[in-house]
Structure formats: C-alpha cells, structure tokens
Amino acid sequence: MDNKKKKSGIQIFFDCAQLIIALFIPLAIIAYTVMQNNTEISIAQENRKQDLKIADERHEQEIILSTDEQEEAALVRYFDSLGKLLEKDMKLMNRTSIARFKTLTALAQLKSKRKGYLIRALIENKLITMNPGENLIIDLSLADLTGLDLSTNMLVKKEITCANFNQTTLINASFRGVTLTAIFLSLIIFGYFIKNRQARSKLVFDLPMPMSYYYIGSVWPVSNIYCTWWIWIEYSLNSIGLFLMAWISIERYILIFYPHAISQLSWKKWVLHFLPISFCLSWAPIFFFVIVVISPLCINVWDFTLLYCGNPCYYTVNILVQFDFIFDIVFPITIIMVANMILVIRVTYQKISRRQAINWRSHRKMVLQLWIVSSFYLAFWLPSTITLLIQMTALPSFMIDQLEAMLFLIDLIPLFLPMVCLSTLPDLTKKLIGIVSIRRNVIGAVTFKRDMGQTATIAIVPH
Image 1 (cartoon, rainbow, N blue to C red):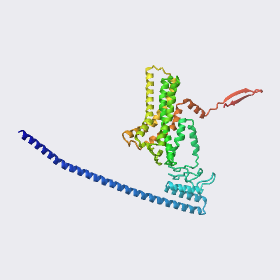
Image 2 (image 1 turned 30 degrees about the horizontal axis):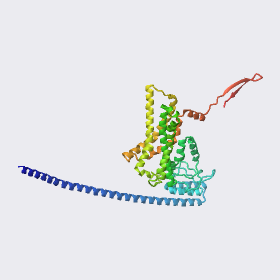
Image 3 (image 1 turned 45 degrees about the vertical axis):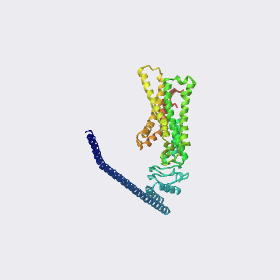
Image 4 (image 1 turned 90 degrees about the vertical axis):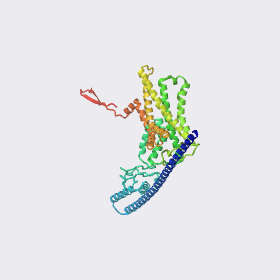
C-alpha cells in the first residue's frame, strides 16, 4: 500500500509539472512575441523621429539659406538705391526723407550682422555721424536695431553721440567700444558704492563680468584665462560674503550675551575675533585657486556662450563638488539661520521671563542691523541653495529652467546691501535728508528810528 501511495504521489507531481510546463510555454511564447513587437515598434518610432528630425533640420537650413539670400539681396538693393540717390542732384529735404525710408526698410529686413555692416557704411560716409550743429542726413529714430553689434572690431574709436536714436529698438544691441554719455551715469553709480568695502570689491571685480555677458549675449573677451579668473573671483567673493555673515551672526550672539568674553583677554580676542575673520577671508580664495586656477585633477574646458563660461571641470568630481556645495554654501547659510533663530528665541525668552540681565538699549541697534542684513542674505541665497540641494539629492531636473534666475539674485546682493545698511542707520539717513533738503528762509523785521523822527523797517534774511 505504501508503494502504491508513493507511486501515485510521484505520478501526481509529474502530472502537475507537465501541466505547468504546458501552460508556461505558450505564455512565454506570447510574452516574447509581445516584447519583440514592442521592441520593433519602439525602433520604428525612434527611426521615424530621427527621420522627422533630419527633415526638420533640412527644412530649417533651407529656410535659413533662403532668408540669408533675401537679406543679402535686400542689402545690395539698399546700397544700390542709396548710391543712386546720393548721386542725383536733388534737394536735401527730399534726399533725407527717401534715404530715411529706405534705411528703415532695410534695417527691418536684416539680422544683426548685416545691420552692423549697414550702420558702419552710414558712419563711414558721415550720414549719421555728424558734428554738433550740423544737419543730420539720416534720422534713425524708430529704427529696428535688434541685435546690433557696434563693438570695437567694427568701429575704432567712432563717436555716434550726435546720431538720433530716439525710440529706437535696441534689444541685445552692443555698443562696446563706442563713446556714450551713459559713462557719466556709471561713474555716479560707482561713486555711490565706493565707501562700502564688500560691495565695492564685488562691484569692481565681479559685477562688470556678468553685466557684460547679459549685455552682449556671450562671454567677452573670448579667453580661457579670462574665464578661469572670472570663476575664481566669483566663487571666492560669494563664499567670503557667506562665511563673514555666518561668523558675524555667531560673534553678535557672543557680544550680546557674553560681552566680556572677547575684551578681557587678548588670546580670546585672537581666538574669537581675528582668527575666524582671517579664515573667512583666506579660505575661499585659496581653495578655489587650487581647484579652479591650478586644477590638478582635470583640465577646464570653457563654453563662451554660457554665463560664467559654464562650469569648471571639478564639477565632474562628485566628492569635490559635494564638499564645495556643503561646506562653502550650505554650512554658512545654516549657521546664519540657526544663529538668528537662537538669538530670537533667547531674546523672546528673556523678555517673557523678565530676568534680563542684559542692557538691551545698548545692543538693540546692533541686533536690528545684523538681523536685517542676515535676513537679506538668506532671502537671496536660500532659493538657489534649496533648488540645488533638491537637484543633487532627489530630482535632477527640479526647477532647472528657473535656476539661472535664482542664481542671478546672488549678484544683486552687493547692489542692494548698501541700501539695506543705510536703512539701519537712522542718524546717517537724517543727515543725508538734511543735506539734500531745501532750507526755508526766515525773514525777520527790525525797526529803528532815524534822527529826523522817521521810522525805517529792514528785512533780515539769515543764511
């Protein structure tokens, strides 16, 4: 009986195995067929996309060539008609009107490169470059000069101060190398910031570079050395500002709650004041000089069409770029946030408990000033820092289109920092208002008697 039971059990096992195999083989064939079909369909779709992409690129190339030929023909027609017009013996008024009409029509049909050729021809023939007091031959008001480039490679020390560009469209126009009266306004702006050390260094060394990029649309001058030192200056100044603000937040807390910790002993002054500030000023320039300028781990390859010439090559070293981001950006920003939160919590606790042994009147102004400046730093740094942190840890494409605008906010710090500091100095603000305000003249009347019994009244105006 036992042998029969064993045989029947083995028979049942083999029957079940055969049934499973019989069911699995068709399912496997079906699954393989479906996967093969999907693969073929995806390959066909990819090939179709490639064909469509190639066709679109060819079509765009044909459109570009056709547009280029049309612009070339328009420019040739313009020069021919303008030459014939100037050769004719007409009245100046008629020539001026016709030349203006043809010039505006040609500018509307041309792109930036040929617009530059046209403007250069007008300047060289003294049709828009006039001496003060002379009549203007061609008026360029309301002209479309989008993308115009009047840089030094086209015009050498040319002045167009007498040309009329009233209501002219100058989108992405470049007047690099051309003398303009706006230089005077730039000097006024630099004079305003000249007394603020941190803003002065940022303005003089760093801000002109991104301003030039946004103005021209590309990096100029096109040089690897320029890009290398630009990155070094940019990263160094940003890190110096963050580290200084972080340590100021800590030192502010020490000065308020432990005012004698620094002033009692000289070694404490060195440890709690001079050494940290020296580290804040020296760490970033040395660190970025090694990894950007010397660059022992890789070779920098710059893209002159991108802001800051793209990223330095150490961005390809994960450990190094993570250390840079965490230590040079996240670490000081976290210190600023935590120091301000602790200060607010302790101040609130002291006021609630009414056991304050601190002279708040002597420290209130310093707390207010540094809290406003710290909040200003956080407001401009936190958006880009949080976005980069999410991109590095979770979503690489998180707000990638808005990141450049967030990074641009950092360049606004040295521009608005003096204004923020001025708002925290009411005494200086009152003095400035007193300087620019108009004093009212007070007229007083003085009466005296002359010898013959006559009375005279004299008005006295004090200065």
